Image 1 (cartoon, one colour):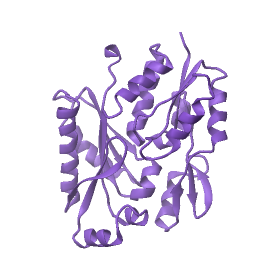
Image 2 (image 1 turned 60 degrees about the horizontal axis):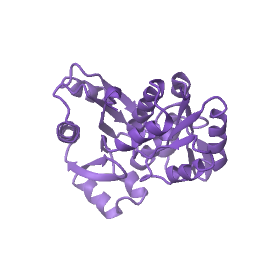
Image 3 (image 1 turned 60 degrees about the vertical axis):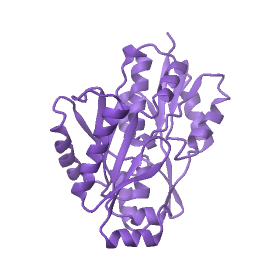
Length: 293
């Protein structure tokens, strides 16, 4: 049987400790903060990130150095036959295309997956890849499955403020000011390649209802799920260091799916630098059914 390793970048939200526990490798993503480079979960904790963000620091994401990626791959391939590498969506960063280019020098042993995911949905792709590798699938089969099912997931996010989107140029100052004046709370969507507007609400309560209904609609009309929801993964995600609101939202959703565990996870910092703290998200992903591949 081919021995297949799985690796990802930290846009998946997988910490270095979690990676060690899972037996995989996670390449830390670089952040430039006021001109200085930091690496997620290496010399930049979530607490430090949000402190700098709240302090008005200029924060930008960038791709890992080419040598860091290839050195990582070479090290893994010393003990594995093949590697499945799962970076963040190509629609949100150039790092996937860079990895695809680099993989050409590895004689078919590195399979770079472009499955259009980030944060908790990207993390689930990693877990699915690990399950497939354990079941004996080779790298090309894992890549094919993850790319075939790339759109079998959604993230819906409501924001506490438009300030960070304005700062990043994703909304105009005038639109942000008007939304603030009218107390409009946007609901955004990540489904595939981009972070897009989905809906808007006047209260967080209504925004949460919109997100829940969007998840239910995806389950029924996109995924063909059963009413129990046991063929999908449902997550609640959040930005910031306080998970209490997310835990309350989780309880609300859990009542709707008593037989299906709802999971709480922080959003990846690469999303949070654009949306700021206080965001709340609902996500759903079609479960891997390894017997139907």
